[in-house]
Length: 572
Image (cartoon, rainbow, N blue to C red; front, top):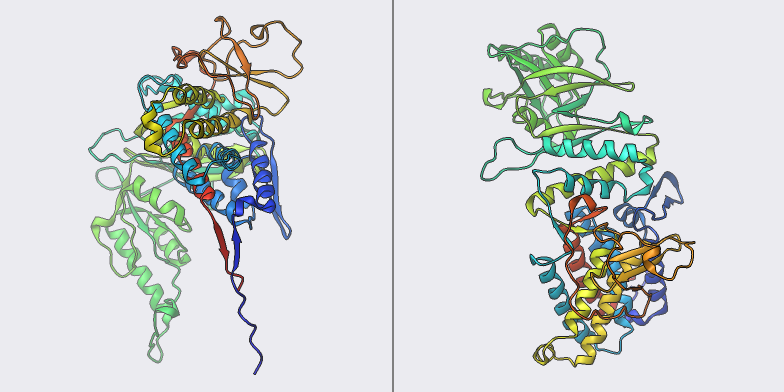
């Protein structure tokens, strides 16, 4: 008998944030994320040692999803950010950079972790109350009766990822397509529990971005369809096309052996029996005046031929991902067995036609009224197309979130610097009872508040990648960028024309100051003013729901990590 290896004891790591390895890993991850942030962010090329697909991206879900992280502290951070992205699709880099900033700024304070956590929670509540108040000047109401704000919101998302490699014409074209696709997914008849539809992305790689298009209904790729031939489809007496949707295999294969043993009598052909059953199903479909049969899996050639001879179009290999859109487009109930057909399971379509894009042929399912549409998305290379698909899906999700909460936040770092200015003002005028309730001194509160504000400002500074000077004004607390290589001037107003979000210009005496790395920006004499926002002036907007969630997730994750006293790892 071979000897068994002795069980190894678990590895205990006390005070993990004091370890050099953890600090270095956190600093490295923070640097990678900061350098990827914003429209001028640098791309990261990701690939594994075994070869395979190479990914060039600056998107947080792709970056964190491809990275192999062994450090337990960083795994907590990345898991939190990826969970946020799974729910909101946007503001992933913002969340991760801010979380790293909180950890780096708070751990250097000579304040007990419990006290830091209590104070930071209070600071977060001040931020959230301000963002949700009507008086907040860095939030914008989204009017769905006008496209201006929606266009700015979608364009901000499309231009934030340079790996898409879009020029202005392409951005404008895609912005209109994304908005058009979103409008298709909004139900025409509003009910109590209205559900938004879905935009299905159809890949066409190696074509120009401006060749992209959006169509109502659903496109199914059908290589066997020949162009030029008329599309004869059987219709019912009410001039609609009846649809049958199968989720079960119709290939005629024997049942799955895992489901049990099949007893076959001598002289009986199992294959012939299966085929006869399929042909019986075909006869019922013809009898029920079905004009189109769609199958998720494979359909037997003999059944397809029988249906064709009787004027019924058959399409197989639709795939699992299209089953839900097909159900919603046609109103069909997926049929899970070939042994029972109910007349109530059928759906219907208004029309069918053939569409051709590049070298691909599609069957276009046109319903009477639908919340499903198809976005034919083109880009020149596979890497750029992958990034563009993720961005378009993010834009669709952001628009859905904005329907639920019709608000947006000023982008370009202005919300972060405005919040930092607001917190500095607010924390300097708190009553003594606040410190007593939190169990801290005023000095401790100010130290944590300063670290909180510097973390917010770190996110704004991360938008600078080419040596630009980053300023903040002491009136509105907005973020301003001075291009690198600008000539020396006696006044900052000679070098900057508008703040990063586009709301404020240099016509007022704003008194700018540097947004320094680790030193505090000056406290405003009063609460930062709320500028009057004109939609036409907006340069960039952020999703309100995603950014508010990102702010909360960043702080909660940082507090969790700061509170770690031990890491226990099983080595077996």
